[in-house]
Length: 104
Image (tube, rainbow, N blue to C red; front, side, top):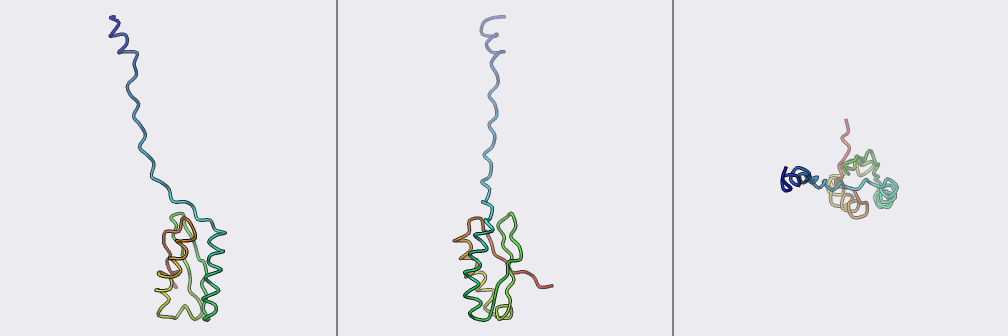
């Protein structure tokens, strides 16, 4: 075997590099979420309404139930999307969306 052939057989093929992993969203800090909701609730309770946390999943989706005066208010969907969702997304890392609980 020639010296060149010997070197070629002992060299290893370049290793395939792993594809970069998709950046995972941070998990929601439940204590921070509860504390932030408590501040929001004070404003809603002053107007006779309330909001209750139903669920928060691993995808950052927070499910809330509007109660009291908020439950029947025509502005509640606007309050949830433009008010509550905006505040939670700003102050609680990992929150991607806020959705209303479906009353069945």
